[in-house]
Length: 177
Image: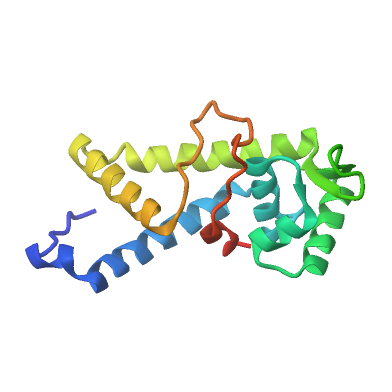
């Protein structure tokens, strides 16, 4: 693939940066879609997003989950019911407030999200390995700034399988629902 030169003034051009990010977004959507191989017959893409949110947050109330995914609680409930039927999630009574129900991944749900994440990570790593060391450093710097500007927390390390202790999930990620 031929290397493209970026005009000197283009780095300050919001439109040029937006086009570059949109192009990268298409690539990442394609990588994400391929990472779902073997799962798509069991769950829908919005349900996978819910699994990923539960994987990140741990046990979560339905109302919170609906808010994070920016869907109506009734829609979230239907999604949860399907995930429970598929054996990927379950409900438990909140030990702190017995009137509340918490939703969480089952062991199968944790395995499923780990498999999806591992496939996604491997494909992204293969792409990143094609970059020079200097390009990789520049990409880390640019994406870190982009993620911070968008309020996206850093993705967990490869060996980090536990939910984030602060239970964060960004608003931008909810748009993937």
